[in-house]
Image (cartoon, rainbow, N blue to C red):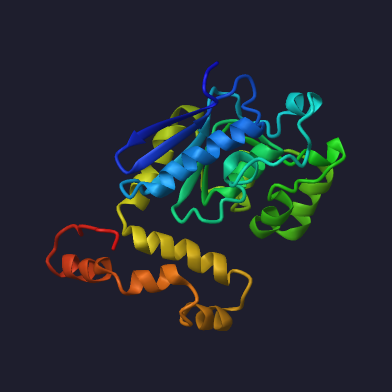
Length: 261
């Protein structure tokens, strides 16, 4: 049997492909395989950015594998330490992930894309949270993340009607970063990944940690929390060799050499 998750190293970029024809649907073993890939990415200091995409040209992921459900996999099955799809509850992943959405992202597939930090979508991409049509709700992050990415009435409509949103509409709402022709999708995602990977890894980790910790707060309280010593990634960045290297490289008119420490 072919592995459901394929990985490829491209310098500091780690490419992860969910490859389960026809629809890249996700069951428990696939969630565990995705988590293993993301854990490999997290644990390797030579890797800075991950790109997640779907195999084939039609589906990014159709979400939970309903065939597995029919065969006895419970709707609330334990998908492993990263939660559904290996990423939706991977709280310890402090590196950026780009979802390169190559087609249909429905249900848990949309929730997987929402768990990434940035989304590059093909012109053929479509997004929907279809769980309500199955008698359940989008509880693998959809009901929590979508209202943070869309105006509340639009998010409520998607959650309660399962309506589809095309790539261009998602771009207008700011839900995705870029929309490109399908043939250009991975090249565009790699260009974005390279722009991110050129920067200091501790700064990238600090950005993720500070946003995660302060997003529910107003700016004043966010400042107080950031300066309080309660966000280790921020303090690690401030006291790092890289925080010295950056200004030094600028003054010497050269590219910085990041050490991640």
